[in-house]
Image 1 (tube, rainbow, N blue to C red):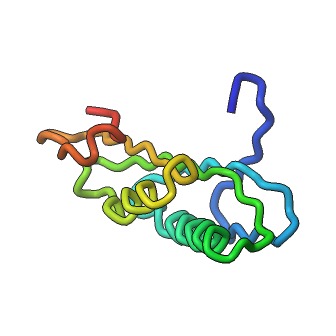
Image 2 (image 1 turned 60 degrees about the vertical axis):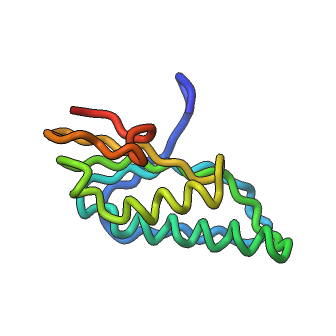
Length: 119
């Protein structure tokens, strides 16, 4: 997004991402805190499946990018972090993540450092 971009937000409730073949591509920004990552991680897995299917068989899904912003107290409370890093490596530029920690007291591991902000 850029300054003055129009965005749609949805907070809580039942939500999903189910693009249909032929739909225009959309860029997703997913924002999670703590265990709120659960449904968003499922969406990321679905996006990865569609990207993998698209690359392997040339389906008609047109996918944009997915960017996850995920916050927790410390890196040990970032659920699925290794899986998320794996998705980023498998689909570079298509799936990205920024982790944010609010109460980290120990050194952040080197693998997470480039993707982590906070204390």
